[in-house]
Amino acid sequence: MSDLTRLSLTRLRDGLKKREFSSREVTTAYLDAIKAANSALNAYIEVTGEIALKMAAASDEKLAAGTGGPLEGVPLGIKDLFATKGVHTQAGSHILDGFLPGYESTVTANLWRDGAVMLGKLNMDEFAMGSSNETSFYGPVVNPWRASGSNKDLVPGGSSGGSAAAVAAWLCAGATATDTGGSIRQPAAFTATVGVKPTYGRCSRWGIVAFASSLDQAGPITRTVTDAALMLNSMAGFDPNDSTSTEIEVPDFAAAVDRGVRGLRIGVPKEYRLDGMPEEIEALWQEGLSWLKAEGAELHDISLPHTKYALPAYYIIAPAEASSNLARYDGVKYGLRVPGADITELYEKTRAKGFGHEVQRRVMIGTYVLSAGYYDAYYKRAQRIRTLIKRDFETVFADGIDAIVTPATPSAAFGIGEKDMAADPVKMYLNDIFTVTVNMAGLPGIAVPAGRDGAGLPLGLQIIGKPFDEETLFAVARVIERSQAMEFEPEKWWQS
Amino acid sequence: MSVDADTVRRIARLARIHLDEGDVDGLAVELNTILGFVEQLNEVDVTGVAPMTSVTPMVLRQRPDEVTAGGHAQAISANAPISEDNFFMVPKVVE
Image 1 (cartoon, chains in turn yellow, orange):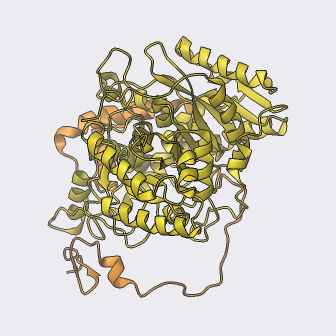
Image 2 (tube, rainbow over the protein chains, first blue to last red):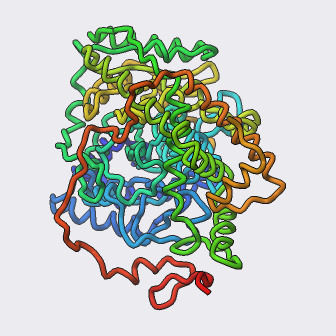
Image 3 (tube, each protein chain N blue to C red):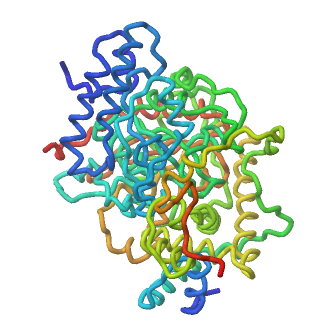
């Protein structure tokens, strides 16, 4: 039999339904692939082989009885940020050492309800704070992609670096991920995978370790646009346990994938043309737009004047929310505890040892911008600017624009341990310059592979949509996906 | 605005993160880099602009004031590093 791990999620699902192969066979193939690859890639921090085989057996019974769910028997990887009952859930952090949730996140529960199989927990930047997966307590994830003729290790992007690497290296059929400022779309762009950040409120945040609650959204990373639509269909839905979950019908996303772009009005924002942006990114953008035009979309130059302020405003709002959300990690209720002479010392020593450097830095920035005397100058001003950023988008959508197309990232994947990124935190933050506006405005965004740079590394385009109009994103992304006649398969150098 | 060593120590104290004295100056540089980056927000005229409170136009749902969960003391304390009879144990806080 051909390698089952190479099949798309959609093809896998159909083959399982027709009983061409069993979930046990597929699951075993994935577990073997993980065993052979993980020491090189470090994508999984916990492999749940026993659980996977048990879930696969249950799926095979349902498939035999013809009662399988929409994802019956399909093996998935789960980002370590999602609470999985009785299974490793540490948000890539030391401070949650040994934590085993007594409950299941709504998103993963939805996936299991629909028949999916859990392969394990995926590596990530600590508390989802990072753009390279280098802040994980479990060490960096290595991108399956390398520049042609080079054996230098590259980052897979972050924070969902384990999710993106595992999908790109055929170590799961699809993966859950989360996106606070670009953490789904940037790693998807770095690994030639498809990443969807749904509209804020589309997926429940219940049971997902909180980073910045007004920005966090869960979404899928997959190998094709249709795969992403299928997976989001299962992940999404109203949940009374999340007070910001929106009570709105979940459409059949997969049905929207092939509806084309004829007559769609595509906005091209001039503010996304940055000084010093590589020529290749500009060329990729123009090419993507030409594909859409060739299929009947109308292109319109638009302006989103507050774009440049989104990233600095984000670096006030996200750390502020994080400093509040992460207050709960104190060595008392769960995880790591470092003894102290009194309770304050217990807190301080536990948090110093348990949080990595980037997390400490962000908690401190957040604490500072919320502290007495600085709240108005920093936090309140950033929230006013957030209003303006959202208004920019509302204005162009009100003018008749259906979707906006931009580059996903300002560069291709970079090296692990790159010195100028390590020396200057802002350099690393600039990775999210094209993606962060979407979180600030609560909009849906998708990253889709669209080309390769001169070194053969993948590059992605981003499509931004109206609130709760993920369907148009899937339709536009699909046209880009089938217009680029390019193989997006990394060389399999990691197999031991 | 920029932070000095004393401010770094004060923020760390507020954030309940122990700082080694040797890390203070380095952290001050890093925090100032970030604060320098966000400084550009002062260019924007925000007169009359309301701060965002919710990214989606929604009214928070209300539910009947009923007890819907509880009695999970054991499950809640199950992950505590130190607990006794489902109580979290901490150093003495009241003399």
